[in-house]
Image 1 (cartoon, rainbow, N blue to C red):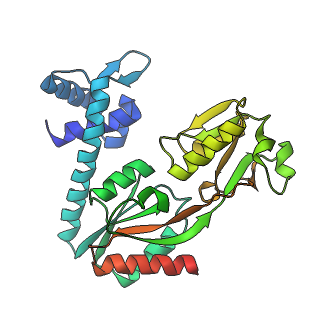
Image 2 (cartoon, helix red, strand yellow):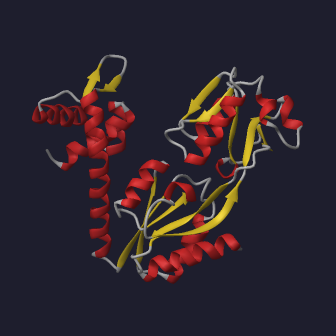
Image 3 (spheres, one colour):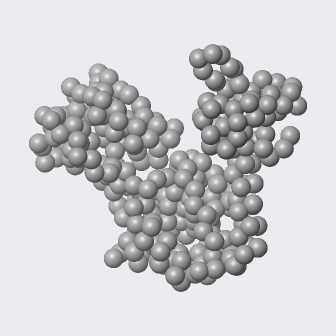
Length: 293
């Protein structure tokens, strides 16, 4: 088993499309097929179920993917570090976050940081909150942008709150509720609801969603893997959504109306207290100053 096999396998597991994987890796489709067949032969098991219409992971393939994805990420980080260290970089800073909407000031932070620390190589990764927490606790990442409640049980962690987020209702602009200045949970009784997958969202969000479901027991409920998918579902008239305002980008087709929900979400940046490198302190300080500004 070698690196190209793992790279082909992980990418195919994510795309479930041989031609797209070949295009992404700049190889031919027969090459991808050969790499997967060779890997399956070496392992002595089937990783994919292949028909004329679709490609799916087998249970063994899914298990293998969950382990190999992290190994491939670590390998790519190691390779990137080695290449950059061979040039002009003196150190590396690994930062994990969930999405560009949540960390909208990140480009400005990076510009300022690069001016002050030009010899530090910055590695960025997007991950959902569970993967992000796991990568952070295993010290694969130096800094994460996160909801406070998702990491407050960890020891020796520093955290600075950047903002507090309230809950809003996202709905089509022609929806009757879009003209209201504030929406009550009871206003949602007649609507289909689009909620974030409770296994892929922070505890506060899952808690608020559960309360909404209890108070709207007869509402049709859809679950979404990501806020951007939620937006597509809303535009497709599948329902309306309740989400924290910091994951809701402006959209000309949708209205964003505050919800009458007392809970709020603390969002900020976290780091390991025992890791006192000056570049980490510098990035945290720049981030705080950027958000205060």
